[in-house]
Length: 404
Image (cartoon, rainbow, N blue to C red; front, side, top):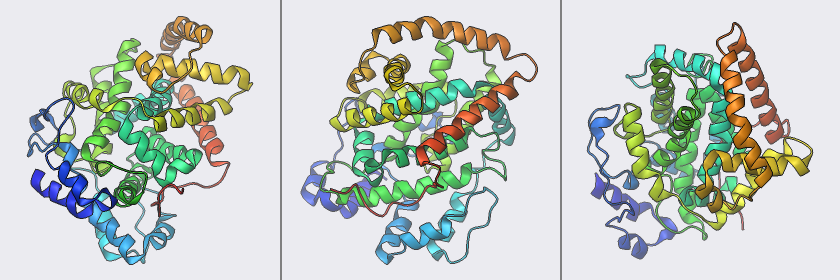
């Protein structure tokens, strides 16, 4: 498998150049060899190949063929109104794409409907924390991942970050929705569309004159991003002493396990439990993080967008800076060059534990989870409305890279 994927790099490296690819034929990992055992995965077994050199063998050739045949815009138009999990695919799709999507939209055999419903209830009562952690926290972590920051910056989405964040939010909010994997939900559709986007970026980005290095969005890259979401969030919830049952923790992991599968991560890399997830995160996240010029610029854009959603701006931007530093810690904040805000940082450190205790004291009361969910949902809709300027926005396959 490793040799097959190295040959794939030689064939599809594009502007990377054969000489440069040959120089990387024997991968060198900053933190040593890949040692995470597939026995700790939802599959329970696997080849154990280094995920840095594995991509998406099902989606990539299908999307590459769409580009070769000039069918990307046709497909985007046809899939525009494909929204619900139970919705049939539209007519007119290329046969190879239709076959791929019909397979890719199926839940894995190990998906547990009971756990998915428990996860929905968990999201209902913990939505405030999860939106904060997955949105602001995960966003700041992602800009401190050099490969991710560069792939976002130089792909088409980097030129319009409001649109890029809006489309990312569509998937993130779909995962946290109460009906995420129910027939009337949208998570399966948006995950499959995102998988197509990833394949398109793998096809397009190596052709950019600004890109050098590995083919982007490998299985390792997706795992790194995945750990900035559920693994990071769960660790913070535990740190904040949020009351959670074992069933709630397992259910929250499960909805993200299913989402990882739907996004094209191989089952042999998806952690089976929190112990395996933490061990994998400790192996892949630290060596893949650090500062970049692109990451600093993206951070400034993201925090600027967050600040614009509140007013007055003279207060909101310093407060957003302090909140981001609080969520991700000093090292990541310094990599992202997030300004220090001593007054607001001290205020958040002092007030946050009190707010958590107050909120958690109310959660067990009747109707409080429903009220909390209503407020959180209103906030999500406001964010999407702000990012999209009220225009209908959906996940579509990009047709090029960042111009210029």
